[in-house]
Image 1 (cartoon, rainbow, N blue to C red):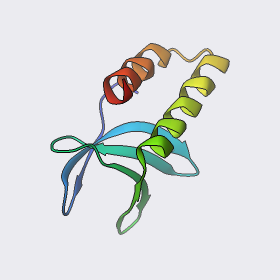
Image 2: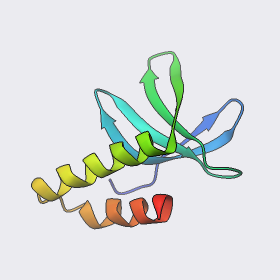
Image 3: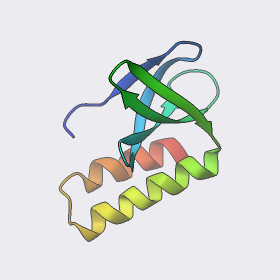
Length: 88
């Protein structure tokens, strides 16, 4: 994960990647305005956005951090920093 990932939501503008959620889905958050979280599934003809609560987004991010620790991922520090910036 060298570069940050962004998506453009048709209503809420720029979103940034918070954490992978598995099964081809990712958690994104609004870059500006209030914090809103989306479970995003990228599809061949666009993206499907599902609004999710703060605690669900945080839970997915915590699961991802745990997975990084178990696998001794070299990206763990980067994901931890992003977690702290987003949720703490």
